[in-house]
Amino acid sequence: MADLARTVRLTGTLAAAAFRAEVQYRASFLIVFAGLLYQCVGFAFIWVVLQRFDTIGGWGVAEIAFLYGVRLCAHGLWVVPFNRMLELDQLVQQAEFDRFLVRPLNPLLQLLTSKFWLGSFGDIIGGIVILGVATTLVDVDWSAVAMIYLALAVLGGALVEASLNLALSSLTFRLLTARPLILLADNVFNTFGNYPLKIFGHVTQFALTYVLPLAFVAYVPASVLLDRTNDLTVTPWLAYGAPLVGLVTFTLAYLFWRSQLRHYSSGGH
Image 1 (cartoon, rainbow, N blue to C red):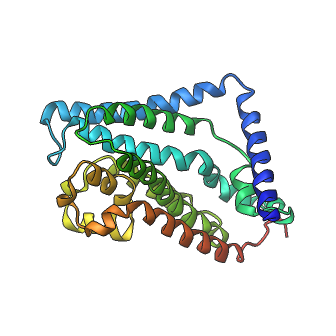
Image 2: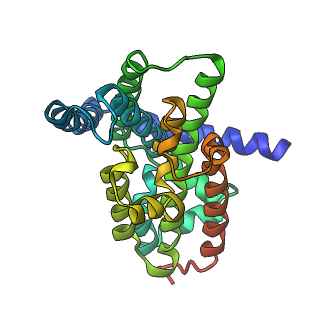
C-alpha cells in the first residue's frame, strides 16, 4: 500500500510539472483552440451530410451527434494522458528512453507524464460540448443507471483506444518505429468511429467489432442507450457489458507492452 501511494504521488508530481511547463506559454492555448476547431469542423461535415440525406443508416442528426460526442469524449479522455506515445520512436532511437529505466518508477508512467500536448484538451472539450447538447436532444430516459452506464462507456471507450495505441507503440522496441501503424489505426477510428457501423458491409462490421474493437468505443454503448440494440451484431450481454471490453483490452495491451519492453536495446550502446 505504501508503494502504491508513493507511485501515485510521484506520478501526480511529474504530471503537474509537465502541465505547468506547457501552460506557461500563452501561445499554447491557441493549440487547444485549434484542436477544438478541428473537431467541430469534423462534426460540421457530418451535419451537412445529414441536411442532405436526413438520416445515416436510420440515425438522425441528434443520434449521430450523440454517437459523435461519445466517441470524441472517449478519444479525448485517452489522448490527454497518452499523447506522448506517438513520440516513443524518437525516444527509443535517440536512447532517451534509457532515463525511464533507471528511475524508481514505472517506465510507462514516466513516459506518459514527461510531456503534455495541449491540443489534446481541444478534443475532450469538443466532445463534452457536443455530448452535452446531444443528451438533451435524444430520446433517452436519463435515469441514474443510464448516466452511470454512459460514464463507464466513455471510460471503456477511452481504454479501448488507449489499448490499441499502447499495443502498437510496444512494437517500437522491436521495429524502432511503429508510427505508420499508429497513424493508420487512428485514421480508421476517425473514419469509421463517427458513424453507425450498420451502414458498412458485414465483413467491415465484423472486423471493426471482433478484430479491431472500434465498435465498443461508441457505437455499441450508444446503441444500448438509444434502444437500438437490434442493429448490433453482438449479443445483448456483451452490448451491456461494453465498458468492460476496454478494461480487458487495456490489461492485455499492458501485458504486451511489458513483454516487448524486454527487447529494448539502447541506441547509445
